[in-house]
Length: 423
Ligand SMILES: NC(=O)C1=CN([C@@H]2O[C@H](COP(=O)(O)OP(=O)(O)OC[C@H]3O[C@@H](n4cnc5c(N)ncnc54)[C@H](OP(=O)(O)O)[C@@H]3O)[C@@H](O)[C@H]2O)C=CC1
Ligand SMILES: N[C@@H](CC=O)C(=O)O
Image (tube, rainbow, N blue to C red; front, side, top):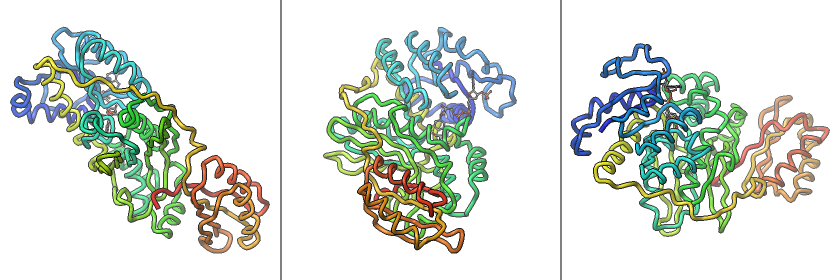
């Protein structure tokens, strides 16, 4: 069975290594050997310490995809184009595809699934969400007899690594990000990680599979972690909380809400102890109850494990003439606007006069029917912040409250607003 590998970076390199080191086991599991037909990269002449002949490398990805001896295409380049073109070309020629490209799946998964169905080939993408964790196959298959109501998780390893470092060692944001890049966790453009685009793409894929509907990245409410400060982390700690970038997808009747944003969660919450580049996802289903999936969420080797798992499944299907179940998108659900979502909020106000501003601020909260749970002062003197934690309120009510708080004469600025979940 011949494989065209597109991309040999953090993940592709480990795929090549595993294909080499485990070739006998893989052949035994599949019933015939897997052979690399070629490896497409941007710089074919770059020195790479890999156990394969240099002649396998090419810059002509499309030429490799088009080769008649190629059976399966593994796409590990990323991005929308030219990856989409390579994948649809491969499928049109009856070649099955394995990919880890969440950005493409979340933007245009429908086209890829339709192309796979039209050509009767497989499209597998376990690596696209939460890397090594077997998560998509359980959603696509094992839980198909149940009704999933909510998926909550930490699905980006880079941001979880950064927040963990900031919390545990007091590391700065940039220092922690460059460490995550060195470890192969970050996307080629790390803006995708730190601004929440990567987690939003994964949230769209998870919501689509969980709720049997098509959800694209543009349906997902998204905030990244670039505005999370050391003072937010310290303030969370004072409340017995930690800050995490959460992905929350929930279904309520015919409506779904899909959101990605930083949130304070109590240290007793099971997601609070998920640190470093680890991911964890809670799935709540009507009959199964609460299920938790946990493991390495980024990095070359863990992601390659998921790619190899898909490769074995696709190769076995080709040998037996079988095909994975088609995409299940029969449910016509509407995506609810973020303004309707209710949660608790932590608001830090940089004020001139703590005592003087309290009554005015309380009135603003009352005017918008946002009920205050606690108020406290953080720090001393000019640097002191007035910290308000609310009871549950809608995002729309909170946004209107914050807009008015910012106009109070004694408020220098609204230093931060963060959701509080799970308490
Ligand atoms: N890193 C991770 O932890 C995870 C990554 N993923 C996904 O896996 C995919 C790959 O990620 P990763 O390995 O980290 O990415 P890298 O940036 O490390 O590697 C990208 C690879 O693609 C090659 N490439 C780029 N442009 C072209 C082109 N035009 N033609 C041919 N080859 C090209 C590069 O070539 P060259 O080597 O010459 O630069 C490189 O080999 C992405 O979709 C990513 O989102 C999924 C889960 C986890
Ligand atoms: N950049 C991603 C890689 C895995 O999907 C992450 O950090 O989670």
